[in-house]
Length: 430
Length: 142
Image (tube, rainbow over all chains, first blue to last red; front, side, top):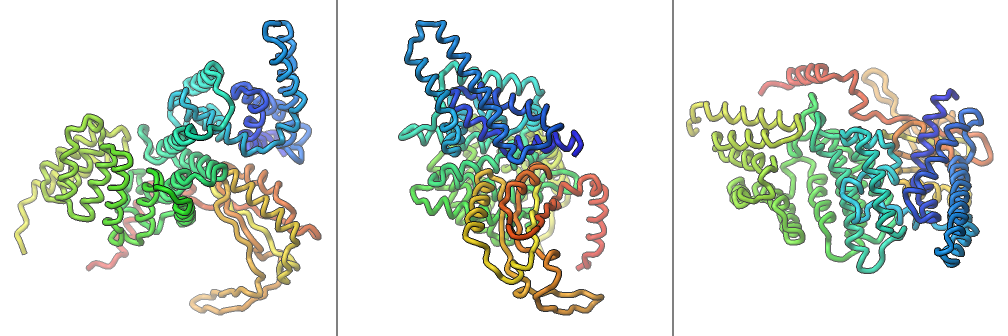
């Protein structure tokens, strides 16, 4: 094995072990930031030693043992410091003492519980949304700062700083390393799901930059979702989110045309959809539905995605059912964006006129003022109604608002198409 | 990226010998670990080749050959489909797999699955356009 091979192997071990390592250590030292530093130290030791000694048979156990030594050192040092600070009292000391003594037992305790604690801590509400995303990818996804920076097209120091600040915020707010229970669980779980879906969406429909999708981010989000579904198998919304992401990801390959331009759902070559992911998505949807209860927003969105996945051709799409699901979704979380999607479904089920009537009620909606999909949808419906001049204006407006260059090009192309149609002499009725 | 991890057949698997209870339990635990890590897409074990068949192609001829087939080591006994970041990650996972045939030597093979992006460098936009043009020409005119 060359040194480069060993480095790649160590990276792989890190990817597999880091989250469990950090979670186990965090439980001991009660500080996620410190736990990650200890795990990183163990990684550095591995990078120093393994190229010469070879990779141990059980690399995960090696990393854990090395990190544990560090943890014991730190806890002992803290204890010495605390002895000097008598005001801290004996109780704290006794707890630290017990912590060191029970380190071995505790660390081998249920890994799943620790991972779940880590999930909730990374997505804690005291953190900003950006910080939650960065910390989750770093601590749970095992991504390096550089990888996260590249994925979000942000300079590396920005992400590094974001992570340092997030760890500090968690420490200062004395966020306990715990999974929420009782009435606290639902809102905290919602925050976790939101973070995972944010990561997925940044990969699925990149909000900025030259590429329309960044599949690696989708894969990271999917992996996190699947891990979470194993950790909390009784939560329907977790399976709902996984189902939604699996089905959406199944279209990744079909969403990009020959020169990197976006291909819309109904224009996609369905033969290029990933049927392994579709099957997984439909199975996750079934699991979500089997848990019973009132369907939540992710489950409903997954059910909508499943309607498309089941249709072998666009013509087979059950638009009436999709419209019904959007009605449900709009009641559950009324939002102009859901309403816009509902308008599209209504247009498909009952004609562009009916859809346009809903879209027109959204024009003065402040939340959609700079949202490119509003004029984009309106332009599309106007085009279908043969009102090409109005359609062109809307599509051009959409292009001006779109931040993704590929998407902008597609919209301008369609606007040009409307201009050509408009210039053409009206067709005689047959 | 996606990997297919292939367990090769041996005399026992070809003879239809059911794995021991312990091995089944260990494999179950391993699969659970893969699922818990969020990397397992699919996993299947295959029945012996005596229940399978081959279709031989020779020019325009198709000949059906019923199993069983010799050369057990060339046959597939089972596979996993894993979603991973690198071949090294696949190797690390396979090293953790319980020995599928504890009584004799065997191999597990790791193969990367082709994805659209793999054609990236060779399959340039120009090439794609060329292919589209050819396809368009081949489509019979109405």
